[in-house]
Amino acid sequence: MPPIRLWLGITSAVAKPPNAFTLENVDLTLLERPLFYIGGHYVTFLGLIAFAAFLAAGFIVARILQSPAIRRFLSRFKIDNNLTAILTTLLSLAALIFFIVSAINAAGIPLYWNAPLPGVTLSLLQIFLLIALLIGVFWLSSRTKRFLFNRFLSRSGLDRALQHAIAQIVGYIVLIVGILIVLDNAGIHLGALTVFAGAVGVGVGFGLQNIASNFISGLVILAERPITLGDRVEVAGIAGQVERIRARSTVIRTNDNIMMIVPNTKFIDSPVTNWTYTDRRVRFRIPVGVAYGSDIAKVRDLLLAVGRENPNTLQEPAPGVFLKKFGDNSIDFELVVWSSEMSARPSRYRSDLNFAIVEKFLEAKIEMPFPQRDLHIRSGTLKVENVTEQETTKRRESADASSDMRSAD
Image (tube, rainbow, N blue to C red; front, top):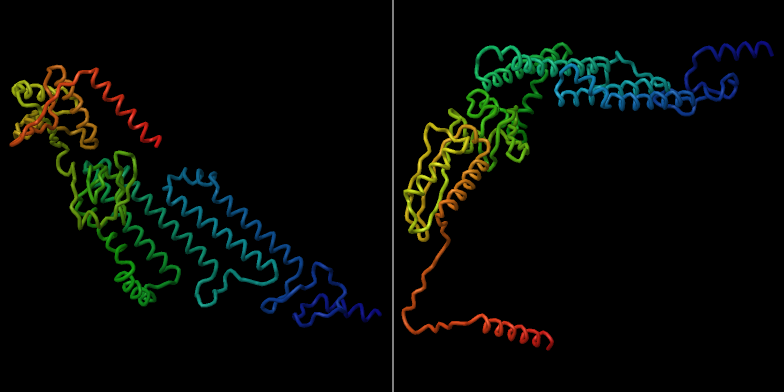
C-alpha cells in the first residue's frame, strides 16, 4: 500500500495530458475534476466559477465606465462631448475584452497577451496600446483646435471666422499626422496599406463618393469662406444662422431654434443667399396699399414716420417710400428701410413695421383697400326690391319651416 500511495502522490503532482485522466486519481476534489475539453485543455467546475466571476466583473466595470459620474470626471479635462462619448465607449469595450480574456485564462484555456493573434501580427496588448494612442491623437487634435481658436488666435486680430478656419485645418493636420505616426509605430507600415488604399479608392468612386465630396467641400468652405460662423444664410430651402462648420456638414440654427444639418456640397453646387457676407446692413421692402381717394402725401409721411420710429431701423441710409403702381383696387406703395440688427429675424421686423402701419393709418383714418368688382349689365333688366326688416324675418321663418318639413319627410 505505501508504494501505491507514493505513486498516487507523484501522479497528482506531475502535470498529465488530458487523455491521462483516470478514476484512480482519487486526490482530485469535485471542484477540480474536468468537466469537458476545449482545444486540448480541460475545463473544471472551479474554472467555470472563475470564468463567470471575471465575466460579471467585466460587465460591471464596463457599466461603471459609461456612467454619468465618469463623463463628468472626463469633462473636467475640457474634452468635447462627442469625444467623451467615444472615449467612455472604447474604455468600456477595452475593460470588457480584458475581463473576457482573463476569464478564459481563469477557465483553464490560456490566451497570452504578448502572443500574436491568428492571422494578425499584433498581440492583444499591442491592440490595446494602439487604441489608447488613437484616442490620444483624437484628444490632441481636439485640444489643438480649442487652444488655437480660444487662446492663441483670439489675440491675433484676425477675423473670428478666419480664426475658426485656421484652427479647423490645423486640427485636421494634427489628426492625420498623428494617425500615421501611431500606425507606423504599431508595425502597420504604410507600404502594407497599398492594397487597402486601392480598395478605398474604388469605394470612394462608388459608395463613398458623397462622403468624399462633402469632406472636400468642407475644406473648400474653410479655405474660400463663402460662409462663416454667425452668418445668416439661406440654402436648399433652409434659412438660419451658421453655428458650426464641420468636415462633412454644416450646422444651421433656424429661428425656431432647430438645428439643421446641411451637407457641405449644398454650399458649393447650389445657390446660397448670405445676408451678412460683406455687410450686415440689409434693405427690407414693405408693400402697402391704400384706397383710391386717399391723401398720398399724408400716406408717404406716415410711412416714413413708421420707418424712422422703429428702433431697429438705420437712419443712414434713410427710410424711403416709393409709389409702385396703380392697382385694380388700391394705390400700391412700398416702404424701404435698412437694418443691421434684424437680418437674423426678418419676419419679426416686417411684422413690427406692419403693426405700426396699421396703427398709423387708423389714427389718420386712411382707408385700407379690399378687393372690389364692378358689375355692368349690358342688356335686359334687373329687378331691385326693397325689403324691410319685418319681411326679411317672415321669409327666414318660412324658409326654416320648409326645411324642417323636408327633414321630417
